[in-house]
Length: 289
Length: 285
Image (cartoon, rainbow over all chains, first blue to last red):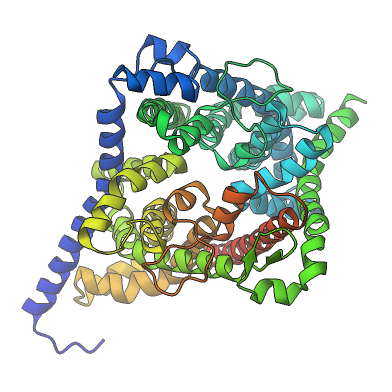
């Protein structure tokens, strides 16, 4: 390596790079702080018991309240119920399917079937969420002739599945082979060894993966727009359109009368997502294999 | 017997993935065929018309394809000056130290923020800043959307790049230090050449993320259906036109929107596959 530059210049350049790396990295933290600050400052005085337990006001009520100079009545209870119900339905289907499929990919790794399915899982994970919305519209909304919370759950199921499969597969791959061999040597049948020896030892990481999958889909708006549709009322009927917190934010954004509810709803969603994210990280650290 | 049952359970759950994947392709193609038959495949892609008046309906995807490519490329360019330093910070300078974990958590949280909240922040805060700076007349447009998009993809590009920077063998670096190289020279002449293919693939995957991002872009791009001529104008991407018009669409318009969806699906699938293949190659070097 020919280097004709004086040593002082070279050292100076090296320090310059170090400083600019630090500065640029610090700048990256600014958007996070700015977003958290914005949502917190504008939203926190809205959060309260009634905000979490009352249905969203309709445009007329909102206009009346605004005309009388009162703060907007009501809250986002419909969205909270909807998000909870749809997530629950999606999880009940996606968790067992995802775990079993992850075990399959890990057990048969190297075979062409597993390689193919593994590629397709990546492809599904990278599919834009709006496409999932379209496809569930075609598959569920059109045949059943109506938007429904069930369709929303199907969309969330398709979004969660690849995430759970990946985390299960990766965990099962790093489990020591001796664990399985020991189980089989003791005379355990294959399914027993898989479900009662391997799966419990992997459970911590899989649980982390599930939490991360939920935190990823809970804020999704695009796949719910053409499936669950949304609404103002608190609804428990899975066959009817249903609100969800991100859908409510989208409605508030588009309806000038309801705009003052936007930040409270965002603060709720953001807190929930970041809490899931951080607790997943904490659990991952604690249960590390 | 129970073993057989268990194995078939495994197989049945695994078969769900090809069913969904193949189903998406088939259903989108079937429902998009109306638009392709009416306008012709190439004409649909190359036409910049978007006329919704009944009787004169004429749909083309060019403005939206252009919008998607423009926002994605601009977001990629804007994200490099930040994601590369973050990768160097966590993967090289402060590798394994507490401050690197802190920065890692920050980028993880950035990745966790729902896209609709990025959209709100962009709409209510950044738009004002952009108008004030005179960067764009209405504040919303391709530039604003790309800017927020670039923040959203920094975490993906940075964490994967850092992984490849950490994988550079330390004997290579030590050899360079031993002949008197400074840290900057080690980074430029050892780390970048060795980790280069991996870093490149990280950016390909970041592109895959940016292509399909829907809510943020829909809220910030201004939603106009003309072919964008400068970066300061408003536009629409493939994802945002679907988000905007799918709800009230039927007939030929619905089919055209699904056709745009099919194109978006194919583009992201190809980009993601290229990214994955490059990553696998980079990992096995």
